[in-house]
Image 1 (cartoon, rainbow, N blue to C red):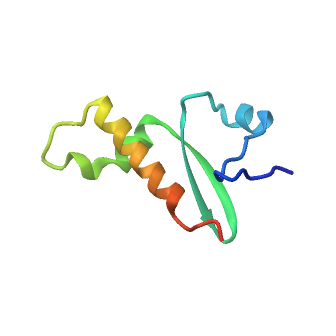
Image 2 (image 1 turned 180 degrees about the vertical axis):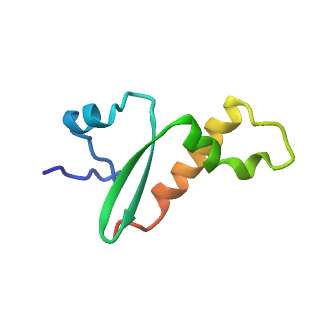
Length: 84
């Protein structure tokens, strides 16, 4: 059993990281469905589709823009009241 910290963080077990081939620096999407939390490893194809709204009629954003957008998205999810 794992305890959530005051910052709503939890350490993923090594077995889960190995099973999902998760490495430090990888991006994951975390969401809840039917009372179950899901962790999905995001690959470049997932990320391109997830942020496609950013590139309508524009050049693909730089790495810096992508990182900032991902950070903002993660912060919004962190601040969301979805842990109840």
